[in-house]
Image (tube, rainbow over all chains, first blue to last red; front, top):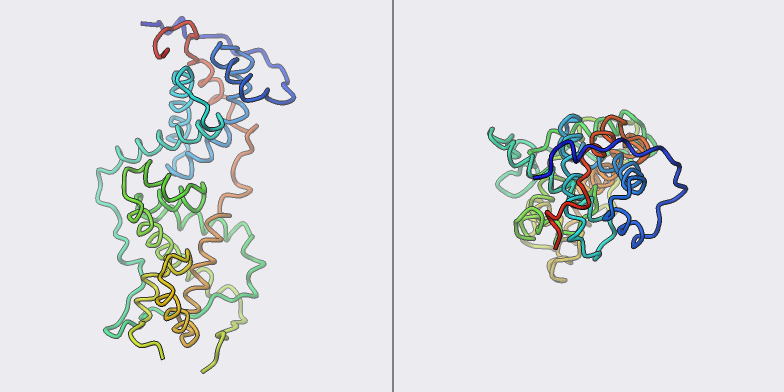
Length: 224
Length: 90
């Protein structure tokens, strides 16, 4: 068993690397334990991986722990890395998996029901909670910091199973198949969770956005 | 007239409609409903905007790659495995 003392290394001396070497060379250096290459790779990816973990875990401390675990796993798995994807893509998946493991462990409490956030309908299938269109002339404001903060807060309120799918599909840009594979669920389950997550998010944002402008277009594409 | 297509049916299948996964005849019925129902048009607009907003929610607030906390980077580098360690070698 390798002792902790053996694993301890002095921090790589700071050296500005103008750019990381090519993938093949980088991989070779990482596998060889080249301190400069390892340090550069960590520094060039840690911030972005931390952002991914924060989006999934909603806790900065947990996110940092997950990223640290993920890098440790990545370095241990380097000998088995076959190069079918970019190193950064491969690392991204390891980080997401580390987050998913933490999320599964967390799920001891009853999840927030999504039902209250989904649209409701009468017996004839008409929506009950109609609040009118979101004003198109407020679109320019949608880049504002308070809107982004409201959107992030709303995403945080989603039940974890649905938030995870929304984050992986709409924010991380994973395909339905990739998401299904990593979550261990069927592709149609991913679609359903994503749709429900989007509906719930829309409900959470409606009070914030429907009153955002005094002017309401209200026009439909075709007046009967 | 688009018989049988309720707001509920359309909203429940909205994902499929937007992804182009519905059978053409069903998609046409849903498009017909949208042509007559301003509530569903408003819902669809809000749904699309919701997806757009979610994709942009973390822009500008994410740390740049170079801004990872130094303590985290140190902790990661401190745990680098010994490259001569045969554990894990294929």
